[in-house]
Length: 240
Image 1 (tube, rainbow, N blue to C red):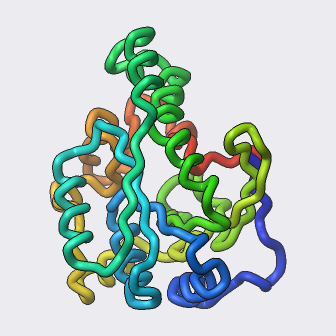
Image 2: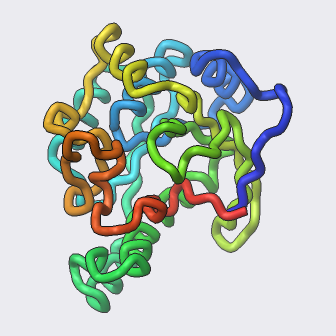
């Protein structure tokens, strides 16, 4: 996947609200917010629902999410006027992968962990993106070393269904701090995942996520047995 970063000021908006407003006006039904229901994602859902009632929000249910994440999904769905679309991995691919490599293959090597993420996350994502012109994410630069170079608007060149195509990726919260995220949640009384109160700043699949220790990086609880520069699942990797 190649990502072309935007140069100049054409897409440098002052606020996340401006990025979202521009996206829904330009792409209408062909843009959707990707949500794993972490803190950044619920902030974007709150913003987006105010800009465009009935806006599209999708999530990928890997089959191994924490119960608290499902609780958050229900709270968000009941609270906001959004179109929540849930996508699941191909059951045949899951069965084949588990038969060959075991249930907890992600512990055995980085390659097998990436395979698990590919089957459970990336392939379902590509199914969603095949029907979109743009997607919105809750990435922030300060989250990890792997996200320092992202821009608020990027053009991704992906191979989807065997066909190369370009899709716009929007990161409205790119420059926000963790404090800004939580101030927004508190001020707007946005529902959030209860695991955040238990030391989980970043939440993914249950067996691949743990609480972080004092002083650790916010992504330290994701695939903690791997080097810090490898901690991406393939959804947002940059290959240029």
